[in-house]
Structure formats: C-alpha cells, structure tokens
Image (tube, rainbow, N blue to C red; front, side):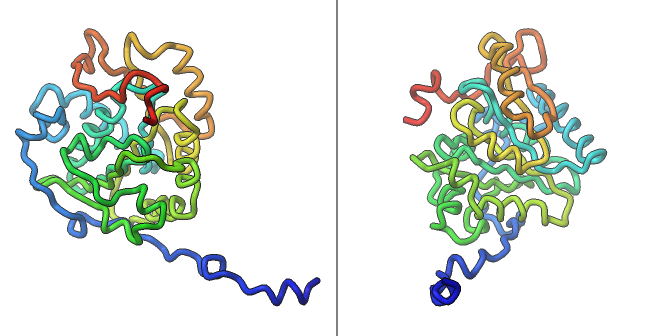
Length: 269
C-alpha cells in the first residue's frame, strides 16, 4: 500500500502552493475620473470634512483610529443583520473619511460577492473584481484595484453575479488576500463590505478572518432581536461598534442610504 501511494503523482495544484499576494498601492491602482461634486451627487460625503453630512463618518473614523492605536486592529468588516439598511453607504462614506487621514493608506474591499454595490456607488463598471480573483480568473489583486482621482483610497470592487460565495470566501485565495492585508508595512486600514449576516454564512466566514466588525442597523427597520441574533452569530469576532443609520434626530438622520431591495427573497436574484 505504501508503494502504491508513492507511485501516485501529485497534481500541480497540490504540490505548488499559491504564491504570496501583495496589496496594490495607490500608484499601482487604476485611476478613474472623480470630483467632489460627483461624490456628493452619489451620496458620498466622507471626502469633505466641511460638509455636515460627513460628521457621523468622521466620528466613526475616530473610533476606528482609536482601536487601531490601542488594539492594533486594521481589518474591519462592515455588516448588517438584514438588507436595505444602508450598510454599503456607511462603508463607502467611512472609507472616504478614513482616506483623508494623513499618513494612512485606506482600502475598501467589496466582499459581497453576489450583490456587490461599491462599484455602483462610485459609478464604475466592473470588468474584473474580487469574485474573479477568488475564482482564479484573475491572478493578481493589482489588476482589480482602482482609485478615484485626487483621493487616497484604493478600491477592490466586485460585480453582481451568481457565485458559490461561501466556498470562495473560505478558499486559499481569500486567505492569501487577508495575509496580504496583514503583511502591509505602511500604516493602513482595510474596510471589507460584507453581505447581511442572515443572507448566507458569508459574513460569518469572513469576520473570523478579520480583526473586528461594525454592525449597521436602521431605526424602524432592524429589530432588537435581529441585532441580538446577528451579534450571536458573529460572536467569534469582536464587535467594534453598532451604527444606527437613519436615526430620526441623530447624526445619521439623513436618508441617503443605498438599499439592497426588499428582503431575502429577492436578495440573490
């Protein structure tokens, strides 16, 4: 039996591990046309700290920078219990606010592989994104990376397409991506936009690989039970905070969130 096993050749994929990946820098990413006026037309206010609508994201930025200083956390997931509560809106604006921090490299990674919306928020089509990379169709993260003209933000988008998302997010390529984030020697923070917690087990898989997560909820839509259950499902990762979006009378009172649609039945269509 031992001789028989020795005689079976290993495949290339078994014998040769994937090469180490590196995160693309701003200079290595593809620039696209962008302006402050277009940003605000698209509901992205975090780039302009003088705009009152950027205030809640500046406060969130301060929270993450404090956690980075005191705990060394750099990799954050942005999740919600349910669709249509402004999760990607918050992720986009928080990334924009972080990108204005001097001496800090900010990355926004779309890991909502079936319903990615970060590219849509910036008005950009996706020819190749994180789904393609995780499926092995694209060899390097560098070929995916964009940055808006004049901004210090690197975006790794994804498209909207059917995908075996849980398997891809649990794959060796995903582990290589996380390792590349952690290997960055320059001061940097990474925001990963994830699917809603109860849409699949995608968010559960990814948050265990990150440092912490932020849970986005919406007043009048997200229930106390949904928050409690979401925190229970994600209990293997630290919660960096809970964001109450569209709070009537609070800093997040503006109704600028981008929704997923109405519920789980249509989520993956």
